Image (cartoon, rainbow, N blue to C red; front, top):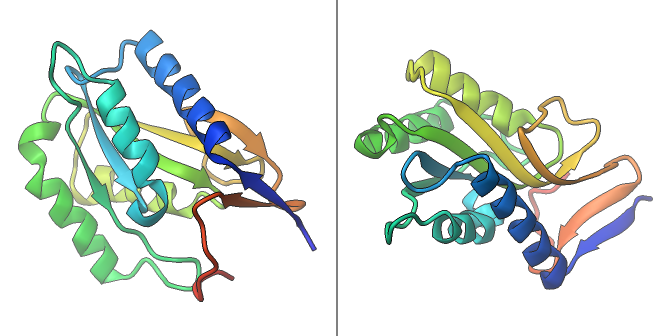
Length: 170
């Protein structure tokens, strides 16, 4: 059995600040970036935090959230439609900006792989797409552009302080 990698509030805030500083040092802010929170039930805290922290000249960073399947679900046509609809709803805010996908944790990398494919191949959006996560499994098939910390999912079970067990976990 894997040991629990329990992330408390102080550690979460520390990583959010670390990632905020990295983004700002790369000149990513509200003037040139839109934040898309992937998996809003797990990633809303960091998505909201970064939107405020990347404010520029009094303007909050534009953003929105998309829901993706739980591990026991498939990325079916309904999920694809929802992602497409959300991007179309916010297309005026996306124009000319870098799209920054944000997740609390990337375990297997399937969500980012699928969402980036939808953005590039279904929506035909050509601007830069970057990805960020607080925690990334070293064995994830997706390699994020910005990572707070890496962990090994084979021996550690990533668990945030706010999580409660749910029936969708595998």
